[in-house]
Length: 354
Image (cartoon, rainbow, N blue to C red; front, top):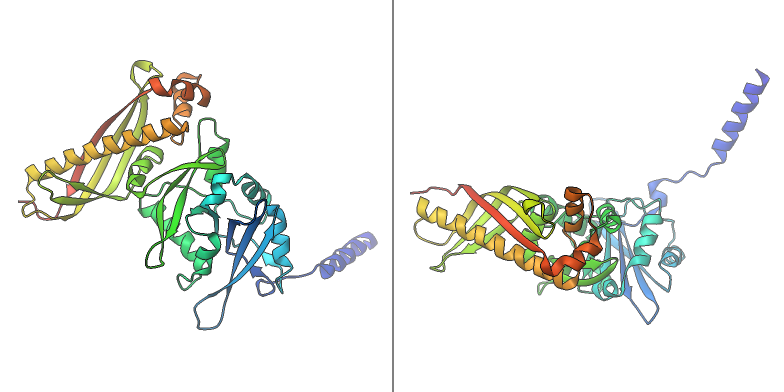
């Protein structure tokens, strides 16, 4: 009994000696940015929200310069009147110029930090990361606004699913090269998604424009709820929203050089600029949409072939089918690889059809 009393007393003593820290004692970093600085140096930007009663959130911005990414946080700490918490980090932005040099050091620092969650969003910016994070968007602060914008475009738009967890998974997957959304400031100084950065390893080597995002997501995620506008021969246009889609991958006659994607899209017409939308015109719109999907997807394959990258994980899918194939085999065979697209579009709703 005496020993139990001693043990309990020691536990209480230890607990009472632990320093308690509440959220009010921390500066919670919601956004991080990295920009190239002078040769050999990187500028880090940290954004923390400041909450005031009945007022929109204000952003507190700290910056530091270092040659090592891990030192940036400790340098930022020296400028703050409270410890910097990273458990609420939502967004990390890399300047495009820095991404083209390689971001392996910054990614390594993020994945090794136990305080950083794997669901945070990564993005590339055409502008300086500091310029983007210094703007004010939304009532909850700029980092939260950007993460919400990326999330809703993944869930309800044509941005492929990506975050730190997906980035690291694809990075370590044989046959998978990574990609991240590109952000830019438009003429109205609003932030927008402006394309997709393509990586070889952790170095950005190319990009695809926003006009290809819908089709890229069809091939990667297999489902997309984005929108595409088709232009008919008489120059009338129809805006189609995909409400369901499915993509399957197969080898024709089990030939590793003959690949086929079977794509099915169900959509609704949200807008039509012509005068009359009858069933004959509806079929014409479906066929034109199918043609657009085939053409745009073929253009993407040509882009990946030229860059010698495999963001669609074609080599991995061939390996699943055959039991033997890898990324180097694909790069060797890229010129001989034939990729066909079997597309079926079905428009289920289009308002009043005559």
